[in-house]
Length: 388
Image 1 (cartoon, one colour):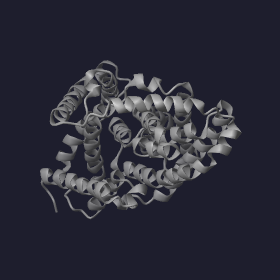
Image 2: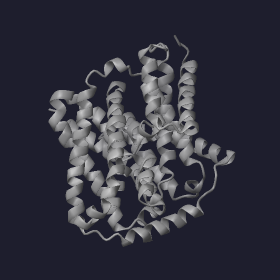
Image 3: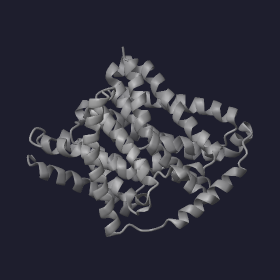
């Protein structure tokens, strides 16, 4: 049994490295349905269940690293979200994206009301974290977890839904591509604007193909950790001055603002922000899962059903909005997956329609990074108010 804090962290990072290497080098179909980030969570939970490390003696290492890594990750993640590029998507695609976001939020609230008697009144915590993920990505999930101090057990349930329900949703949207002509005819959508937008974004993508260097990676890592350190102090000060939100929530929101400012500065053009944010994300995911045992997931089937209810509500409302707003199949489905799947799957779905549309999927997914954390926190608080 591992009792040394450094050995505990080293084992987690090595495990994550092995799984990511398998995904990148083997190209196994398994990883198309269960990506490495989910495998890292499940593997860490399994090791925790087997009591590979002592929970008490490794707690100090976990506590000292989890939140600072999360804050640094949020900042590095948002450096890719240049708001000026978002505007280039045009009104129809922005409407499609935010329609997906709002319908997902409604789905969470309604599903919680329907299922709280089964999954428990406190389920708003795990669902709040999942909402952060389904509006942005895994990074937003752990940011919401840090902001609301959600337990590792509830995070385990959120990850179960995120892996199973999300995988089936991706498969459904890929299958639905064949229905696009009939769908667009039904909604009376004009798809000409798609080509114009995709061409503009493709030109932007070609102009920014710089590879990360030692200098750029060190700059990003150093800046991200400094922002995390300063952000914690600012969060504590804001909590003392305006105690409407707790310290962690203030810290996350402050760092989110800094990240968006950094994205439109020269720092936002520094190559490597994706690599740095992913490194920190996998580290945080492994740390979180290392405190959750699989034996605690007795109610997983009910949570999985809750996830499908959320998706059903989202799909039904999106159909109505696509018809009313004349949104085409591509915009509606990629907007949905940009929220629920993030940068891992939205570009894949976009590319399945046409290679030139990949930049649209990427940019939509990056928008999710911006709204995922604050909107996930908002939905969590709305569900908390309905818990009684």
